[in-house]
Image 1 (tube, rainbow, N blue to C red):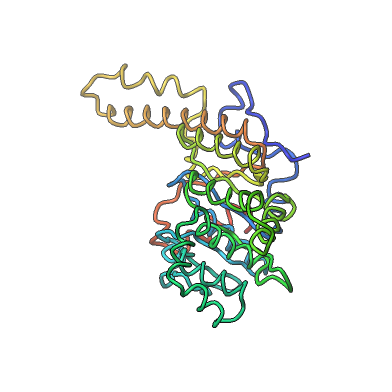
Image 2 (spheres, rainbow, N blue to C red; image 1 turned 90 degrees about the vertical axis):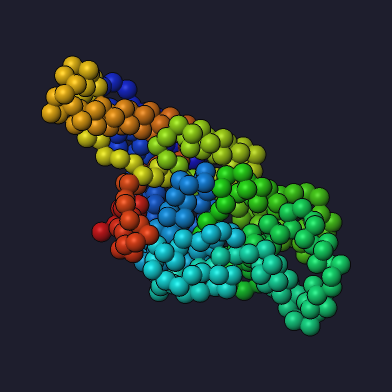
Length: 340
């Protein structure tokens, strides 16, 4: 039976700290995160703008610190990892960023070429086939093949058909929710409709790996806000019910610390109306009211998602300057895994 996230607590005392809502009540959270990094393949998924790349990079750093050889694979994106880690821009060729940590920003054309070479082995055969204008047009026009070339490339690095894998762990920084689900559906469709052959065999191997929660699964990232949480609930339902891919961990990103206890909030909310308009602390009172409203909405969002997603749950603090201070991503990585 898969571990469940703790249900939201009730009563005023339990609401004094927002962070108390999202806590995994089975295996200790740190142990659950270490177990997560023992998988071979992780999808980091979520709504656009919630911090998937930040979380994927933090997980990759944590795994590499444990001595695992890690590939962080981005999917044809406007990459941010180079700014987070203060490196040269990352393109379609695999580059080493730190000890035990490689990265690539996969593009359809480059992934198709590499995937084709993985299959055909001989450059001359590849050029004769893929260099044909009609063949290339057919491949580009076939729904799902470009997506599979990128997902298949990442999969090959984690699970080649023969021999040892190139990496202990491949982390895919997936596109935003809709595009991520479309990409993940491709191997399942290929397995169902493609004729017998190498393409179908590879897709079947990928499906087997992706559906094995001891080897692979999804890390879902969200924000403590209404819309991201709503989309997260739809996403986790599609992953677990339609695709049968396990949600291994839930990360709630950019969580603000609770400045006010629950019993203090009603008085803080009333304060601006009780003060004279020209009171010296009127601005401070309005700021306090806004903060109380923000904390209340944050608490409700965390309660909602934490109560519905059946996975261990972590909260990450809001940090300014992630792309200007490379040390901050290490801070976030250690916060995520509970390491010193």
